[in-house]
Image: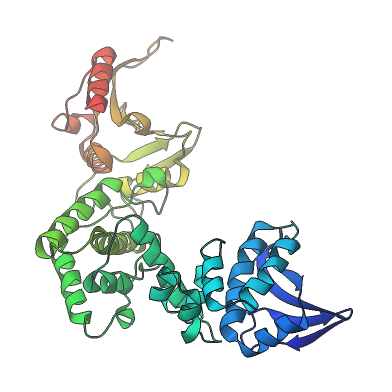
Length: 412
């Protein structure tokens, strides 16, 4: 049978219980293999309970010291009860100087104390008892998270100034650098908000007119890495030029904000038709991939050939499916896009097969410069066939010569 002897209003602070006639300190910490909270108990005495009742600071200090033992138990291990019991007298019944000395020797959960109002400056000096004079029963988890983020930055040598910190709070990346940035003006100190907005305006002006396109080679939502890096470099240079005092974290969060917003616009915008406004010379085309997929396009359909082709690529492209072909059977020509090699082959029929003989083809290769290059070549082929590709790129019919050129570019 279990009865609650003493508890505080904050549900996570350890509770004193009486279980089968024995006094125990009960606390929840960590999780089991099913992600359910684990509960641990430690036997305590009446003297310990008296201090826990009257002294919030000592109660919290004990919690902070026991938590690492709970974490060491993992998802199914047992709490080292002897180690936990050995903490009771030194923390609850010893003079402050001895408690401070103990905390210099043992692991303890700094975040718990910060969340409950400890003076951070004193904690860093090792004066834990003095630091807990400002302790509160209610927890401020955001305060603990910000302190943890600051410590991580300090460990890697990054020191934030006021504008740096407020810029990171504006984008929502103060606590976690991996968070997708968003605009949060309400999170910024009102006194510094105008300065933050000037930084953002500088970034917006730098990338005005720039866009980040999608890359159907990696699915429907993947963005063009080259476009991203181009915008990132442009914004980075402009912000650093206008605000040379901003630290890397602050500059990086602004560039990330601009690029992620541009990528979101690309994902929410209907796919562009590269043939829009141009008269396609092709009446019908067949799209195929390297795994047997096929799709037909006709000029009287609702969308242009390029848009239909890139949707076909986005639907079917994968790590083991990186070769796509556009064929005009009527004209006896086509192009093969080899994404894995950053190249394209154009294929024209020199002599059709007659009397059982195989047709004769001319195959020429050209290197392709990124997703933009592929889009340009596909659009040119749709509008003018293989002949229209003459002016786009350097075409080589010798496969060995082309392979040398490809390796040279890769080595650069």
